[in-house]
Amino acid sequence: MEKFTLSDSIKKLGAGLIIVILIVMLAITFSSQSIDEITGIIAGKKTLGSYRGKEINSQVYFVIEQYCQGMYAQFGKVPDFILHSCMTEQLKQVYVIPEIGKELGLTVSKQSVENAVYEQIKQAYKQSQGRDEDDRLSIKEMYRREVAYNPIEVRVRMASISEVVNALGKDFPVPQTVVKSMQSSDNIVFDLNLVRFSSSELNKLVDPSITISEEEVKSTYEKEQSVLAEKDRKPFESQAEFVRNRLKNEKRQALIAEVKKKLSLFTKDYKLDEVSKAVGVKPVPIKEVKLTSITNIKLPENQTADLSGSDFLLSLTPGKDALVGPIQDGEFTVYAEVKNVKIITPKETANKKDNLLEELSMSISGFFLQEIMNSEAKRGKFTLNLQATSQQ
Image (cartoon, rainbow, N blue to C red):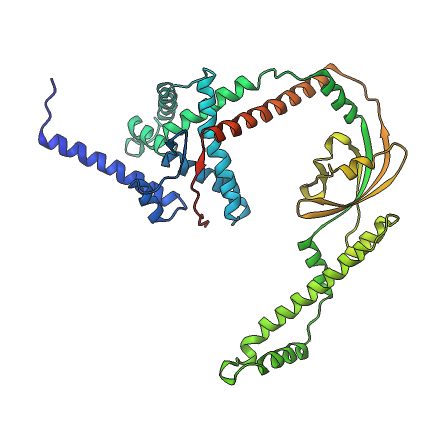
């Protein structure tokens, strides 16, 4: 039997403490949570949330937090509510779907995941054989680093999600009536002329027509300073830029209000050119739009429009042109001229029908899984305590 000395015990305790310290340092370095929040979580004073009475694991939480921040990094600083929405959805999937898998008998063992990671590390180690011995890490060290970056618990949960998605997404039944309806919708095509604008675009459009004279700035400054006590008055040089920007903003708002008033006065017999002239945006022509694509109409500069409202659908009459608007599409306001509505009869191919069936099956299974997940999350009292994030 192997003997352990006091020295061995101290070494093992020291190694364990180093690992704990490294985990804490990683959490502080890579998480956007404040140090007080992280240390509170580690000390057990705060919880990140819970599901089915069990606390959300801090390692899983921090991995998901980094995933969501990475996903939106290309957009720069984004509001906390967007990151929180991403984290809520991802953590809900990571915690709820594996539990659904257990109830369906679809489980992934921790051992199988550890073995898979170990095999990957062995392959990576073999590929590094040509390097200098001093530059190479041992298999043990490579494994430790890999699971520190992406913990085993996260990997097990992701593997379980994959099992459930694969099982529920296979050959989901699609009624023939739905297939025929989709095929019929695919045969309705029309041309569009769109005038589409957002509030920020209106700001840019009216800005060139705004002029602020030095006399206006000085007059406004003197009027505002005259009502203040002499000790509270500030020099013109320090206030001029502030006054100028405020006057510009007031004129901008007045011009936009004037544009909106013009739009509100249009009767049902208005023309798209009148809208275009009022807002200063040229109509965008789009040819051969299919009815099935109205939620994602391709526009120039990689933009898309969603015109799936009931008013637009009611305007689609073969042989009859129509003008619809205003349609609200997120932050955009859209006026649409519908022309050349027609029903085409393309050649049916077995391949096309199979693709449609596959797309519908995946869409229905995705919706089905989402509904089950939301229901189970509610039943298991899934909660999160999300804090404000500090983005770099």
